[in-house]
Image (cartoon, rainbow, N blue to C red; front, side, top):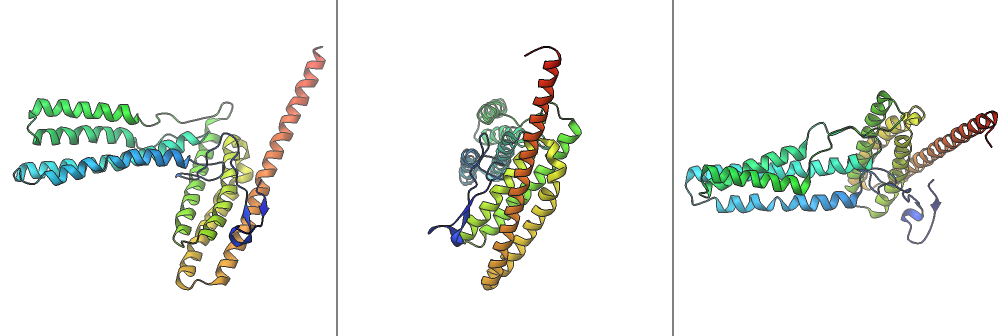
Length: 307
């Protein structure tokens, strides 16, 4: 549960403890990523992004060296470079989607296999580039197959199955997956929007709220039966926070109104308190349910003469 405190270096004189619970990531979002207990691990996404970003270098080199070989070779080389750029972008997006998938306990497989498409496009682009380099048709095909194979070995394929939990029906888990995706999209939007203010203290204040919101998301993910009690928070309230953040940034960047900032921070405080209280209530209900199940099992064992 969030713990509020004040201090010399606290933004606005206060902050919130949003330490992640065991077994959780540190992101929010999305990106799909999350903060607090939820979302993809930013470290994992950043490392994946760095590897994917390196793949933007070969098409740049190919485009620069394409000139001087005649119009046909120029067009083919520039086309291959463009395909390699598209492949690198698809790979980066696929790695982000995979990181978000791995961070969740209930998740749907990516609708479009970005990593597989990137592998195929890489093979085609390398084959075309090899042909312009005088490898011949057979050599170009072999180079393309080798490049696709290395790409597949380095980055793997997309998740192919939905991630589900035992004992929970498919319909309920699909509902949870949809709500979680929507909630994490709002978190990502809020984070991206507030970054435009370039105010470190305000950014930290928003991150405190997003951490509490992400903890509620993870709580629902771990027990989809909690969705009914938390759906309004993950849908209506987060969407409202997203819209309020966009309006605040629009007003604040124009005039830097201290009154607008105070109202926005007050809204964050109210939302954080309500999200934390709802999470705590869900966790207490889960504990009560467990204690009831244990008591029922103990009574049954006693009736069967087992001590």
